[in-house]
Image 1 (cartoon, rainbow, N blue to C red):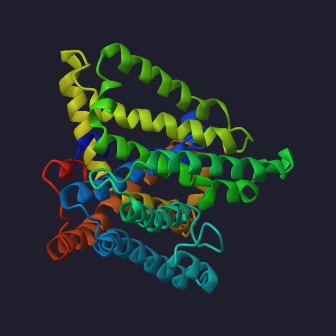
Image 2 (cartoon, rainbow, N blue to C red):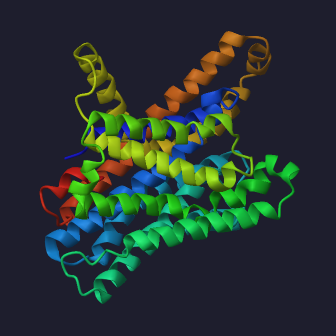
Length: 382
């Protein structure tokens, strides 16, 4: 059973990213890059939750099954996207270099050549999918506590958080402040796995608390006063991205830390706080939430294809001889094109998800079902 509130968060994350790429001149659009940070916290929480749930049910973690299931979730949709990229580039006689395609294929595009600007986050998550099971299996192997061998998760997160923050600070310090405004200059700080793993591991910490210390975690949200205080704290932490630009030394260092803490609080609020809206708002909010949750179900494919739409749609329209002249002096036409980009990105993402991603997932679940308890299954991603 899917958790619709988490799907709503997925939808918000992908809409923020789309806004960043299409509406960077607006305040929200300029801060839309934080959607990736929300994805990171969600992934850390959900993926670790799968492994924690499996251990609680079977006192073991089947890492081979985990990798197979993750691979069938991610690779088919991504490689179809890359193949479509090749066909389009081949047709336009603008094929990217072999090294760029190899970087994408082997998920090292955040450290080397790449085709797409937005696929770096997939590389960070892929590295996380390798490191996390290895780390948890080591804890299981060397812990004498069979009921809860993961007590070192909290100290490990603290180590990762400090290491990533120190790495970001050290990198920023050697770059002249005036050069940080360039994407090519601050990109290594922004996309490198060793600088961003703390966001994912904060999700792991939350997953550990959620599965092994649920009462203590729930106690933090047990009253309206506590929930309100945490909501205000999250708002304060997340508002920094609306005030401080991404290319600033603060945001590229401590800013990332504040963001994942803020998003982690939002995630926990979504899971623990209910029934706070006035009755008059419950129905419209539920209807809006259902629409957002539906879109969030397809967030992976939407995220993949939105970058392609951003590039391919204008290129296709430029082939129409009158288009450039018409759009240059027509504000309404520019707005229509911008709205079309968002609509087409979401529509194409949903279509490709239904054509590629979900059929493979259905096959995966028949061939490699995930063994877990009915309770923990409620929080599992597809």
